[in-house]
Image (tube, rainbow, N blue to C red):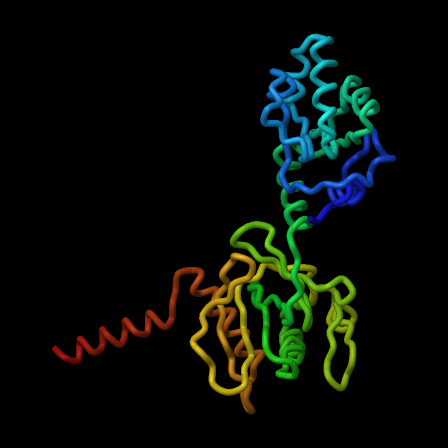
Length: 301
């Protein structure tokens, strides 16, 4: 099971620690958050999601302030007894002293965010989905071509890195070379990134390691990109494969034959542009077939 420490969460989401600097090594294992308004106001904990980050927004604070002093103490004692990873107050609101006292007693950190409640929950969910997702390593190079995330696959020595190098010379963007890490933060979306030690670097036969950022500029690299199209480089005839599945997400796939006289990088660019056209609803092959049928029909009149 993947985990994220509160220390990393505080840094990435720019949170202020109200209490609990000594407990930032606690971990989060759930990507979703919880807003415990019903639990605090009604004392109903049957469906309390204790393993999640607890977010306290305007609604929760309003309901909390409607309680009597004894009710506040009772509800917070029970709320904190479930040992949730942490509590976060949004809209830059300071935590009431009752919350701080309960946090001290149970040694659970309290943070503060400047964002609105919905904004913070969105950022928190996106971050945790990314960090907690299962990651796999695959052989392939990831590039962004005209805004399209393209994974270039192929056998060793077929020219994947050389194709990426040519694409860089054409102004495209590299995410990873030769080895790519992939993860699925949510069904239907696969993200590719480079292993940390290889970020911004690529290896070319006879040249060795190349620092892409220093050679082509900071705009030539990205940390990650959604996978939208797979291009497999093959020797010999291509097959009719049309898709590849990563986790449980199906991604369109084409094969490009590598042969003398063929500019593979230009073909990859054309494949990316054609993908964009199809996504916008225009299928060149379908338009061509319809035109042929129309012209044949006219010729028979």
